[in-house]
Length: 178
Image 1: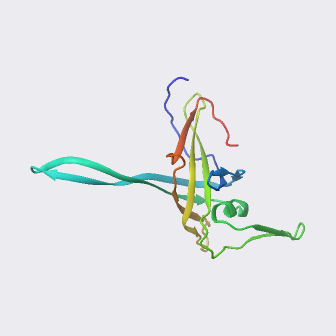
Image 2: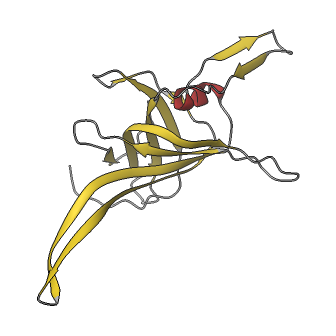
Image 3: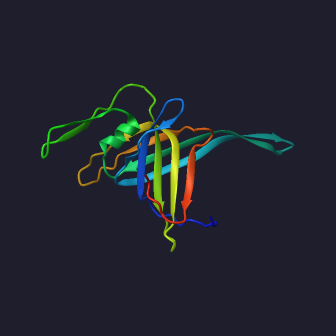
């Protein structure tokens, strides 16, 4: 495959799936419709050893992977993957309802997050990121304001699987998420 650069612009799609068990089994993907923003950062602490009025060595501490998600549309099935719970459907059209109870338990629930970003190059390439294993650390944050859109969101922390926090992929031809 030839080496190429990406001129990634925006986010085209996002999906979440449960991650369970010691084998980190990934469940079926659920769409995050109307995805607005996914941001993430790998960070670590550093420790410096000084002597003779200069820095002798720098040690990098344990890496941490954190991020956030902002939604444009609410999909209860996707929220259940991210935060836990079960969607309950009742009634029939035109009076059908779906509900998701926000649980007060402290069970760790992990999810995988995949995002798809189109490129603006002439070849129609694409860029994908798969965050291997994440857990909500804050949210669902919602704000309902007169004359304003509600764009709820989550903050998350990532956990590595076999030493990998995320996998980044470049595609010569844009490839939809599955």
